[in-house]
Image 1 (cartoon, each protein chain N blue to C red):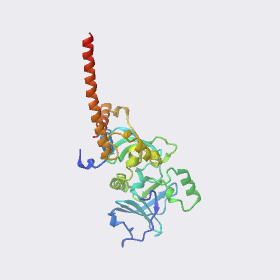
Image 2 (image 1 turned 30 degrees about the vertical axis):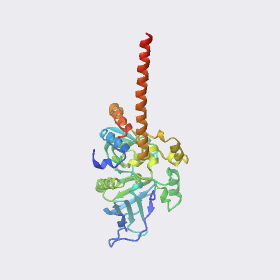
Image 3 (image 1 turned 180 degrees about the vertical axis):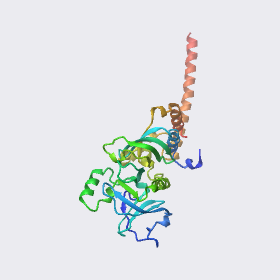
Image 4 (image 1 turned 90 degrees about the vertical axis):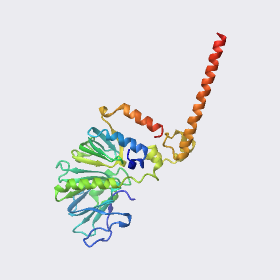
Amino acid sequence: MVLGLQHFDDPVGDENGGPRLDSDAGEELMLVERGVAIALGSRPPDSPGTLYITTRRVIWLSDTDKGNGYAVDFLSVCLHAVSRDPEAYSLPCIYTQIETEGGDNEESESSDSESHGDLELSNVTEMRLIPSDPGQLDTLFGIFCQCAELNPEPQEEEEENSWFFGNEEMADDGSDSEWQLSEHHANPIGYANGDHDLACTVHELRINDQRFEDAEEVESASRNGHQFSG
Amino acid sequence: MSTHLDLLSPLLQLFFSYFKELVGKEVTVELKNDLAIRGTLHSVDQYLNIKLENIRVVDQDKYPHMLSVRNCFIRGSVVRYVQLPPDGVDIDILHDATRREARGG
């Protein structure tokens, strides 16, 4: 998966001019909304187009310029919100923040959008969708929520370690795996990497139990000793 | 506990059941891009996606346009911290949950 916003230039997929979907992967159309303008970053809105919300991504295609379109996976949409306050934005819109590959790129993004006509899409961290009918905002918001929930993070297998250690910095650290090998007992109980380590933990607990029993015997023996001497 | 939840990491389950108790309370959600949003917790799902209402941005100079968004959906995977209201922290429940967690389930 590619993070961030992309140009959408797939050929038209159906007779109504809709985008070609990845139906092999189960992608389905959830909502089509005509007359939606899009504003990327701090740029003024593009001329109206049609918004396609699918089970996997958000696609916007220009009505006037057929080659002009954008797509973003729901996996890259950090947050979405309904913005109605004119002080926040001049037009009622769905406000979204987009996760990009480069991380924090806000400064370069705003300067790019000023100096180049064609801004770096991979740096765009904000997108606004402005429906011509503001009454549609709540519906759009609801569909966005549904689709976001359809796209949980695919982290179960490949990102297991970074999840346990809790932050990216450690996952990027080359010594990470070494550290695990030498000190894997430091893993929180129940979060060890597989059943083997869990079994070890249980085994150790049993050893501890035996030690406890031994200690008691020694203690009672010494208590007896006291009695003898007293 | 539903069977659906059993498929998820125990840690997610722990947070999920804990955050559910905080619905209706005021929390501050800090995202991995440093944006911090304060609002009323409307709902949370099993992926820790968070819906806030009546939000305001803590650092208003940096994000002036997000001053007064009515409702907001935050993707669970981009959340760095959730700051809890002092009266929303039930120490006993947290202790109990973490102890159970430490025993491995």
